[in-house]
View (tube, rainbow, N blue to C red):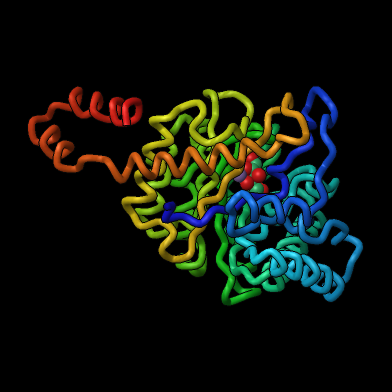
Length: 343
Ligand code: XUL
Ligand code: MN
């Protein structure tokens, strides 16, 4: 029995489109995805603003809220919660140069409009969490932006969101690059600094995605630990990644089992989930996967997480203490490998 509640986004049921080839599967309708997630054992759905209200740019605030209420009715039908809403500030032509750090004043206004509407949507869906994946907040051409000025602009944008709604929590999902070359908020350390500099640090936290930490050359479990130590790990995106290349969003644990074990271990040891946090998955089906079975990446990720929870429950802390006292870390390392391989 897992101590965690799991969530996933509709985009995790992907059609296989990538930079070098078109879609290879039909996109499943939203309600079918919610039902599938329920059947797979998920408790919540993660949203981009336009996952909830696809044509939101053409609608008034009241119309957006009314559309969001229809989505809430679908969630209620399947007894599913909404975990968070994330403004999608990377697809629209007005976000070509980013949103909060765009060089265009009009584009900045659009980014703030989307952010405030994301908060409105979150309220309708019954969540107070806004996730900012700062996709284009940084540069392709390093000299195109004044980094200090832009980092202040980012903090001011977050302050405006905190002021717009006194109940909202902003969670920044760090990522060092892709689609941009250099990002302003690449690691959990950056997120913690932005939080501390904000008007209400208690309402600004982090989402750690395993693959993003690996892309930054860091250990995902230690990144989680850093946010946990600050009391600011608001969500996680568990997945996996084969080294430093494009963002792969592989099923959790399929590349590096020991890394995955240590992520689950740090979450379990620190009571993650006790304040309502979800274990979010952000995983992508392989492009080769046939449509009927293009959900197994989610099922596998959840099952691997649960199996690793069982391993954590078996972890012998007395033996660990003995190894530490004797400074015999080779023995401790072998113990961990045997725990993972033998059971
Ligand atoms: C991008 C990524 C996003 C965010 C949500 O790398 O992980 O899916 O999690 O916008
Ligand atoms: Mn993610």
